[in-house]
Length: 439
Ligand SMILES: Cc1ncc(COP(=O)(O)O)c(C=O)c1O
Image 1 (spheres, rainbow, N blue to C red):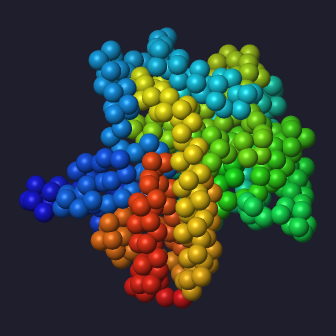
Image 2: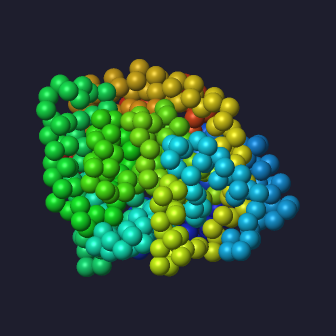
Image 3: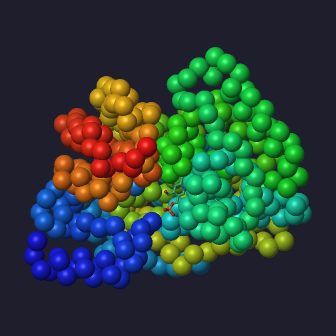
């Protein structure tokens, strides 16, 4: 490694925060020099195959010519203008596309700068909706355990109360209501025993008890991502939607991780054929190029807010509708519109089913879960991050496990040969005792 990189990495280690690691004694961060397709080139010139799509976002791969071109072309016109009082073609086109591709009740678009902000916006929309109807007691959220919706305050307040950040921020987080996480898995027979219906009854009891104070119900459709890659039954999602209607509660679908094809449908809500009142998208929206998110809502939600006392929705970030981000999002959605993504995602799913599923036989594995281009292995012991991360890099792959989860959600362009390399690395690591905590 050259001195240049050693100095950079040392500076980074001392001065730059990285997510969920200590600042005083951080886990190592690998410096990326360049990225192309599904490969990241590190500062020592070693290449790793990316199994993470940079946290669900880089669906078309790195350094994509169409996405590069969209950015360069837009930057020649302008990169950003304020969205208050001004508008532009990239944002208008993006809104048109989002309205056309999302469930049909969603007709109004609020473009913001990150997933957590999109969730804050969704929650504020729901609360302002009821305030506009003079129903000011309806300002709480109902959700399910094991959820994850972001790191800002309103979002944290609907994350899992045990695994999330509730303990540290308990004094300041709004107290919302939590149902048990859905247990009937995707692919299981919903009617085989009464478990599914019992869960729905327990959920209904919460709707019934708290309806007077509930502004909205929020859930990650079909896949609870950061809360454990838990893939649940579409009937549960259908029931959530039905209960929202029955108890006059808005339904917020957080599609930030699941949206844009990852689960095998364009949006995971489509597995249950439901249309939410409010929906958040982000992550893969720009093909992973820039931070951008959107909160879509129904005409009823938008009109009610607009006709309320305030006369407008109370949110307006500086980088709302950023033109560069919208331009690259348009290019990414154009790539998705070719529909080739579907074949690729189903191809990845078949490969994972054939080659990742057998790892269930390994004595260290508790469960294997697969849907679309998502494959997760739950281990019986938690991983030792410092060890396992280093070993994956040595094996030529970029996989970042957490807790008892080793999971991949590779770019849609990943070939079977590259998937094989990812799975072979996982299989090898499972045999390495020092990558796991003791039982
Ligand atoms: C379902 C879900 N919602 C919200 C977020 C927050 O998005 P961001 O990290 O862009 O703020 C995430 C991020 O992982 C997510 O998975």
